[in-house]
Figure 1 (cartoon, rainbow over the protein chains, first blue to last red):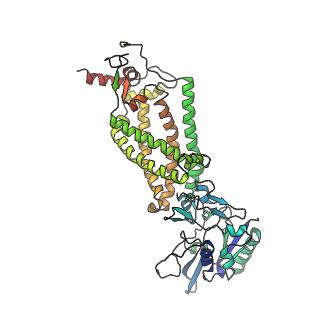
Figure 2 (cartoon, protein in one colour):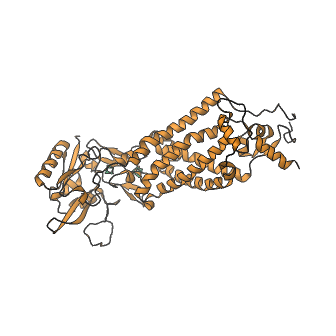
Figure 3 (cartoon, rainbow over the protein chains, first blue to last red):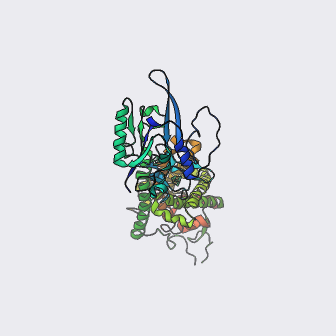
Length: 263
Length: 214
Ligand code: SF4
Ligand code: SF4
């Protein structure tokens, strides 16, 4: 299978939430009761039963009018994926050929490392099952030659799914066409995310969207520096003891010299 | 062999109290469990170790609850051994300058108290990492309570604790067993022979004899 890109052209989104519903539908996820918080954004954030969410945001446009921004939020399926780097369980977070980062919740032990290592705080914990859940890019559908449910359901052409190069070209074209503050977001971040936005505003305008998403250097320090040092420290200690024992041998008390000997 | 004859090299002397041995057992035992479960959780190549606990999910809990025991027993350890473990004197400096008699020379090692300078150094390392590992460990256990910014700092700090402890724990375990015959009994039965005390902790033996001469 070729490497794929999901292009999310936010200029076309009408916030119908077909994607959100189709995702729930395909994955058999229940609705979670919430309270009215005076916004259409519902539930308030991604959660263990909501892998994709339309964010609603009001901003003031240049002419003083109120403008509504909609953002389809979910896992970006990063090439340099923090979640994969942090997960302690072999085979729990894996990548498919098309570029999906799949979290196998059945293997998850609930350590929550992935949530903290993800620059977008995507993986969501379910206290009842003690496991993490997130968008898996419908890797099961993709394996059958189908496109992800959200892309299938989107009636406006906001979510498009296709081969990497074609999508990247399309994204660039579309951003140019829109002009102004419009830009492509994702293809240059984290070695290329597999979900790529066409934003209509500058990235910093969007809520909960990091302008320059990066895996924290603390995660790097943890996994790439101190983790190998731990092993080095352990093996060093072991080696030193073995050498000492072989060269110098144990330090034995002397029972024969000094004091009286009773036998 | 009459092991109780006073002043013979075979005389058995009480060197640790039952409470000390209990604290040491809990602290050391939890520490070893933490290392085994922690390495299984840290290295994918070592995750096979988790099968002895019943998988990585259980291993995580083994790690969490061993951590609780470590935190509690460590508190006792720090309290009961602080005076003997954290205060260094001139003899300790000399001991360090001679490498404790373990490395390039065996001569001229100043007589040591109940803990020698190396053990004191280990105590200081252990006491500081006890605090570090307990605090970062609890935050990593309940990260949502403390928030992402704090938790993400704890990951490298926790690993820093492992890196500074792993080698030292191995060396400590070796010196307390194979490296210095006669030491393990002090941790299990609490007794040592007079010969062992003369060799390892002469200053303490002197104090002991002064106290028991009457
Ligand atoms: S967005 Fe987060 S959860 Fe998704 S692949 Fe990237 S790091 Fe992993
Ligand atoms: S919470 Fe689950 S998926 Fe996330 S890092 Fe831990 S074991 Fe892996």
